[in-house]
Length: 429
Ligand code: ATP
Image (cartoon, rainbow, N blue to C red; front, top):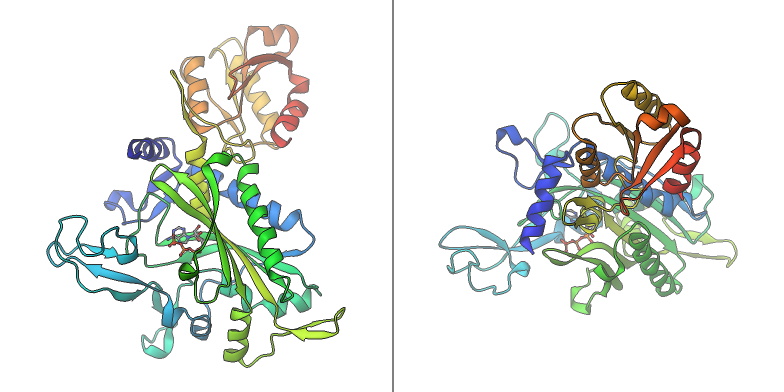
């Protein structure tokens, strides 16, 4: 359904969720900027992830590694040699394609022309560290955040005195020079990942993979994605990355088809063994209970912050006869509550501002006095604000306001003194 995607892209632009990067210069292919509402939505998605994988657990630590790393990291991980996609060119129109994305790999999908043989194209961005541009100063923009966790495994284990099983979680930018970016923010060249490396004793890895695939699937459901639009898909043997023993993707049914939101892989001891070999450091772990030393196995749930934000957006989108509404989970909604004066006179604006000031320290709050009250409700529905409060004449008689619910559009009368606890209850659950 390409029309639905177009409507969502246009709403994102019109209402300040997502803009094209460098738009006044004609844009930069596949790069996007989050506007005032988009930045809130994406931040809430990242906070919801951090909340569930770090704060709600006693076996997980956070970290934030730098984007630039020692070049040896990418030799050890296999990225320099193997992080590439098969690229084909059309001999006629010169368009380029990722061969494994083509349905028919002999014909150009744009003009029907003949395609070249595939060549391997490495997806890592290169740059130089320092003022001298020679081969000794080449560094890479990380194509995944994961390696920043592996190289810190010992640091975290020692400083936190952590016992296996435990995990390290990280959110950060990653860069891939994708051959065919597209579908809005689904596939871009600069994006943000939310990754966990969960270190376990060899032999318990199958059990932990099962655990994490369920855990991660239910996170999307918890924050509002319709369960029938989500599925777990196990990788076929020929699809597995060279380091993986088994892998499941969490997929969402976008208007452009079922697509990956997150991969949950059993990376075995591949990464730590490689880093031990390349760095010549002992990265094994001494299990005091078992009195044995081993290199831990790793279960990696690797999610995209932009992809999941897009899934939450698409899934929340709903059209009714007279309104468009984003039915975000309250935790994810960019604005939680909007306050309106019914009229722009008779003390209504002053009273509404007073309520706005009372709520702001607790929730991201908006104030709006422009246009008819119906229009103001529609504007908030369209950006997914769960609650609207209106000050009217009766407010001055009995100190009450109306509280309107985004989904049911039901309005109740409520004393101002009860607003804060009622909203806290409804928004924070
Ligand atoms: P794909 O097959 O779609 O290229 P992948 O299997 O290479 O993705 P992983 O290497 O498993 O992706 O990366 C983990 C997660 O990072 C993905 O599930 C996705 O959410 C996110 N991600 C990867 N590449 C991109 C990209 N180009 N744009 C946005 N998000 C991405």
